[in-house]
Length: 259
Ligand SMILES: Cc1cc2nc3c(=O)[nH]c(=O)nc-3n(C[C@H](O)[C@H](O)[C@H](O)COP(=O)(O)OP(=O)(O)OC[C@H]3O[C@@H](n4cnc5c(N)ncnc54)[C@H](O)[C@@H]3O)c2cc1C
Ligand code: FES
Image (tube, rainbow, N blue to C red; front, top):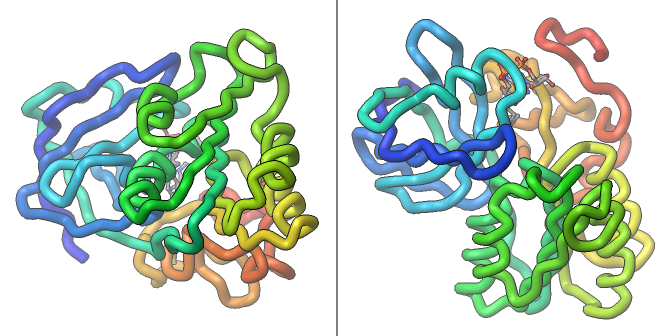
């Protein structure tokens, strides 16, 4: 797929070290919650980012500043032109009538439009958002507006409950009896989410990150084992699909070596 130009409409600081970039592509891109695109900055690099709100004509990305590329994203200004190609990957599936959505930090990115989609489908949504401290809870206000209920956790107790989102999930699966659990965030959190869901026999979809280069199933960089590619078969997987793969175990760097 060829990249197309997209104009930066807005670049706002969302919380500490996180921005929300609003982009208007040259032509509409039809995307679903859970899918991602490759975002390119001329002369810099091209990196995968999840669709995080908006629509086909103008959409948002929630970007955590973690290194050289995302630092350049933070410098973008309205009117600047970036390059986008996509959508790629498989989206979340809407299922049942009660859902629990678990977001760890920037993992919230694809979950904001998912919650919006679930509510439109009349699914009751309880969301949990966790971060290290009160200034690192991206898209909290959006999740609060969109969800039926929102629980917040911070590791230092500076907002919401002290601890991890999975602490709340353990209680919610008993109390809410959800039909499905959705999650995105650090892999350690996803492994625990998958365990809790399995223990309670609740279907669970997680969005997995691996090193994505081509985004199109060609280069093999994002291989998870068992023939699965994150960019083609994911990034959203039902947790049973991940059994026996490198999920929760090996993570590879840009060269394919285990990190
Ligand atoms: C499907 C998918 C969706 C993503 N969605 C988002 C999102 O919505 N918001 C967000 O902030 N981040 C997202 N990421 C992660 C994002 O691509 C990386 O944080 C970004 O590429 C870091 O680049 P950098 O140069 O700033 O940092 P670097 O210094 O290059 O790396 C920092 C960290 O990011 C990881 N990383 C770097 N390049 C890639 C890559 N090509 N693929 C996967 N991981 C990489 C590195 O392994 C390292 O852990 C997503 C990744 C994937 C695979
Ligand atoms: S990133 Fe190339 S195969 Fe997935």
